[in-house]
Image (cartoon, rainbow, N blue to C red; front, side, top):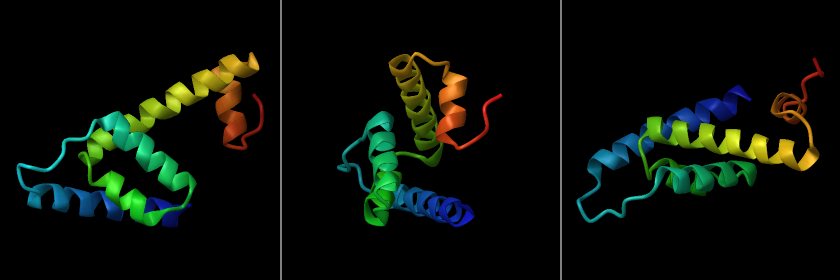
Length: 98
């Protein structure tokens, strides 16, 4: 798990460098588009797509987008399962019920 965090952080740093180097004709990406691409690439363990999505927005914006995506996903699953968001989140993480 820590290796994945380290790799993600390295991707953020590379993205920030690439963002500074990019010219004015670079396509502007929505932070939610970047978050969706990043999370789906992580789920598929596709490092190339992870790095690409991490370069679309700032690390802070990507972090916000990933957090928002996680919240929306947990809420949607909780509604679908008729359970509380807390129960669903703990179950997804493999934590014991409280």
